[in-house]
Image (cartoon, rainbow, N blue to C red; front, side, top):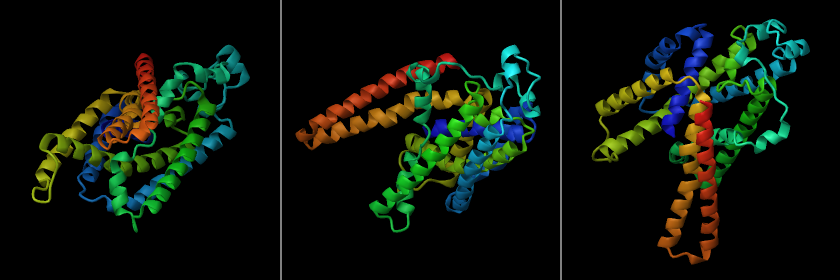
Length: 329
């Protein structure tokens, strides 16, 4: 999951910086420059404590993005005029709308709420499985929390996830209300490069992702090092040369894949359908049932049964979502 997160981040950064630099046709070159100049030094850092202020800046940037998207929805800069809908005249509407490619212009169907019952909606469910990935840093967050009692940790988690859910839910809704089924995997791609409001938003998102990238990458790198070399110990800590070499190798692989793949929604949906659903539904059931068997907690057999049903539902949703993601790729 940390691998898919880093891959998605690299793809988004390539698109975002490409739009900011007006070099969308040189996406691979832009991605390579970002990786060497910005991401590699950040991922080489031994401590990420100095990035804490930038994390707050990233949150503020996402809040600005929500405001900017709401402004563009309310001022209807990207709304197709009635005449354009009837005669499909791409030259009608605002200058911002005219500058968009046809596949990025608003497009709405007439299925309404019935669309929720269609199998394609499971693609969104699978994407949501990757929306709030922080499990790989949960122990680190707990250990570094000031006065780290469980009630304080629970309060931090509840408030952080609550704010994230409200913010991301709002952005998702406004993006869909503006562009409908034409929404790109990265919604900022739907907005014109000349849109000043959204250019500032691209900068905000870029800042947010740049300083979030090392958090996911270090978890990914540590996991790969554990697989290749085994866990580090106090007597045998990781050598800097080993860490640096693994950093270069993994960043190279991520950059190659990010340059090849173009649709970030596919990466998020397929990763969520497979790995995300396994983490959310299947692995908890496996661990819980193993603990109950080991401790002979027969009184919790009904809870194990319910957890098993949840795991089966997760497998079913994941299988359908994965197929839908591959079909739509």
